[in-house]
Image (cartoon, rainbow, N blue to C red; front, side, top):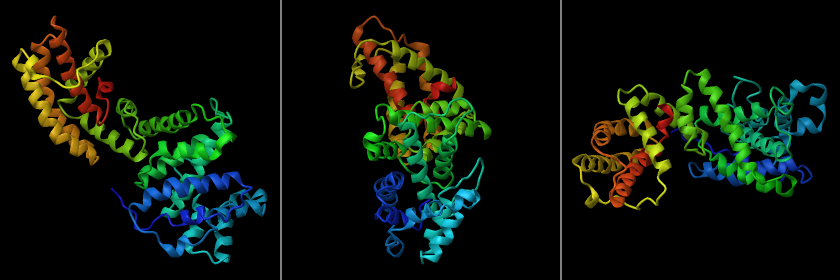
Length: 357
């Protein structure tokens, strides 16, 4: 995974409070940057303290608006702020961020070239999404007067293409907290997150990724756009394996069976309730797969994890051919369901591949 050489240094500038407290958008975006985005990246690299001492980045990013220059020349938005910052003696990285915070300016538009600019752009767009959704002004049909779809796509493109791992669930919830009573918070986080991740469907369709791969990952709800993309790419590769179709069908069958099981599942599989050799075989294969796959999934090596899980096709097929899951004995039946739940849980660590069937 990409690890930035520089911290999003002007985020410190965003957060140090030079913005006017009368500007709620500036305050909220600065807080998102300081308390959500910046801590994420400060775990990776040390801050460049020389840039961090600047407390003017975000405010000067909006200075081109405050001077009303861009009211007459809207194409100067961000560009004017860049030159204002240089004139004030701000470092080049901070000045660039004041222009790059508006990127991408359209579909397929240029992304920020600096990590500082990317951080400011993400904070600003999340602030816009939460604020507008929070007052109930949602886009409808083809009408999107506040360009919320573009803002959501911008967040996704920056995080995925710049390889930046940000938990959007955490960021959105934090933004809602910053707005306080100014927004209707009930259900707002789910609404904003659904809107953001819905934008990925069209993105993948444009890239030739099957919609089933997107849906399989959407079902497990990753909070990071980068993590989401890594899972989708792994599922897309998995679909080309000869075992994929059979395992997808088996997972769908398991999902349907578990949905109809009304009793409480046992906490653990008990081999003493096995009465068929294929049960022992599947149980052993699952144990081996867990040992191999869990570290891979934890390291986000999803493609390798799914390739390893593909080896389960033989034991799974043999189990369903030889075993009646709904056995008459309640203990045997519950134990078989627990075994199947364990199988399904392994795949759900990456995606719900039953969506591929």
